Length: 247
Image 1 (cartoon, rainbow, N blue to C red):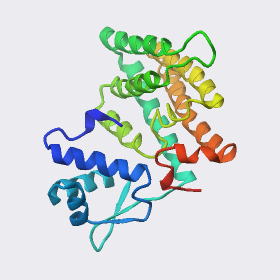
Image 2: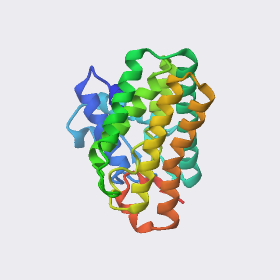
Image 3: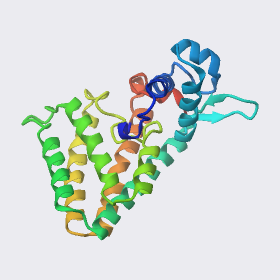
Image 4: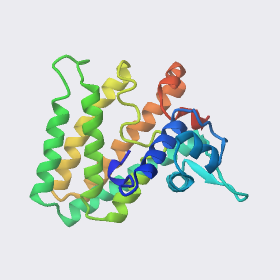
C-alpha cells in the first residue's frame, strides 16, 4: 500500500481505512457483503463520519461498490479483473518510466534509485535460496513508489498508487508470503535484474526501453497468480485478497 497516500489529518479516518481494508483483503468481509456505517462504527468504536470517509475511499480504490439504496458492498473480482489490474499497473509504471527518461531525472533522484537497487542486491545471499524476503518486500515497495514519482507527474503517481491497491496488482503481492516456494524465489532474481535495467534505461534517457522493461516487470505478478491457480491451489489461503477473487 502507498502509505504516503493515507489520510494524515484524521487519526480515526486513517484507522477506519486501514482496518476495513484489512478485513476486506483477508476475507473477514467477504465479497458481496453489504456494509453499513452504524454497525461498523460501533465495531470500531468510532463515530460514523470516519467510517463513511473510509468506505468512500475504498470505493475509489475499487474494493467497494456503492449501492443505490445506500451503503456499500464488498466487490468480487474475476481472474480477468485481476489480470487487467496487473496489466494496467504495468502500463502506468511503463508510462512513468518513459516520461522520467524523456524528461530527465535529477542526479539526486537517480542516486536514490541506485541506492534502493543496491539494498535489494544485499537481500540476496550467496546460496540460491538465501533471500531476506522481508527486507526485499519492503525495499521493492519503496522502489515502485519512487519509480511512480520519477516522471514528476502527480497524476501518474496517484493512478499507479490507486491500481496497486487492487488484489494482486501490488508489486509485492506475492512476497514474502510465498517465500518457501522455489518458483517465487526464481522470479525475484529476474525481477532484480529488471530493477537494475529500468534504472539504467532511465539514466540513459532511453524512454521506449524503460517503458518496455517496466511493463514486462509488472507481469511477474500475473505469472505468480497463474502459478497458484494452475499449479498449486493449496497456496490460496496464504494470499491476502484471494477471498475476493472468483475464478
